[in-house]
Image (cartoon, rainbow, N blue to C red):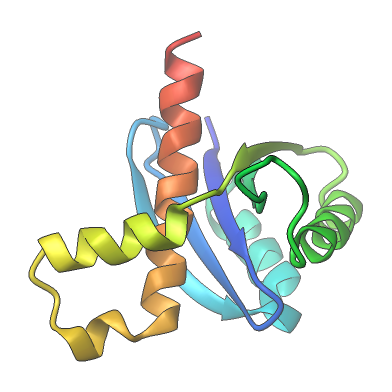
Length: 139
């Protein structure tokens, strides 16, 4: 069983999360510059084995596309091209950044650390992946 990768794609940074080998728990993996993400994932796939991807899709409250939705859809095409044999699942990523911020506050993370956008991106990727795992397990 390969690992599932959760992705919070942004035009500058990409938050990446990964499941454990049994696909039960999502944990933060890294934050990667968007231009380097495909190479990063290819290297990770060779070392650990990726079963599938979970990609956060940004939506507005009324379910319409955001300014970033087109960028994420273009990235999805690049991901499909680089990994044609792997499935890509989409998850609504509304509120993941604010939930990530709130989680850090509740966890006692200092204000300066909460301003680290790379950390927020990693936690957002974990939230995206964990929501997929919970949805998958409830089917």
